[in-house]
Length: 284
Ligand code: SF4
Image (cartoon, rainbow, N blue to C red; front, side, top):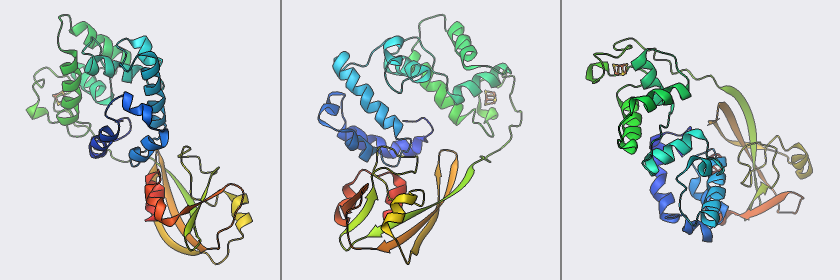
């Protein structure tokens, strides 16, 4: 869950998710849309989809127990080298070294070397000759590098490694400029007296497991609706991965009618729908 997502964002969600999905077995009585609904706000919804598929395999093949070997873990959807290392070290306390950007930065600074992930792992592996708590090591390196050896302005004066660190007291640029692609998209809030119109097969490439509000990308759909007198009701910026979208929202009032690819949802029920944050923001 923490991939590409801040601890603060996950912190606000984790207890809600655990309440609804307290165990692997609890997934058996739930559908993907239940998970997507509670995942709303975390983004990167393919992670929820992979989690759902992975838990199915864990229940069916591994009797509800998270595997404790790398091959089985890596065969699960969404689990790669890093996640399997983190599960082995933190979940099973086995000799394994999850190397995330923070840990890599810490070891690179200490050694003064530019290293690949595998090389960081090898250094840690050869430094840990005796049996230790691999769980504590993994967690403490992650915490230490994100609290003390921070990306910008590391706190070298409080660092226990400063006497031998090859990068101690060097200045690290405070470069917060992230390059994003600027894009614009218009979404259409099409209202009948009691319903709102959604589209089943949208052209907007994100959030593929959700129903969508129609947008200007859905040209054929919009042409069929013959929308007139559009009223702009909202405009805001929204970031999805490395894209910064200028979102414009237009409102139309229409009588409800059937058109291929449309789904009309009662306005009073839109709050219970599994929807990504973007559409919630448009609707609220
Ligand atoms: S001395 Fe500074 S740069 Fe080196 S590990 Fe500590 S905080 Fe990081």
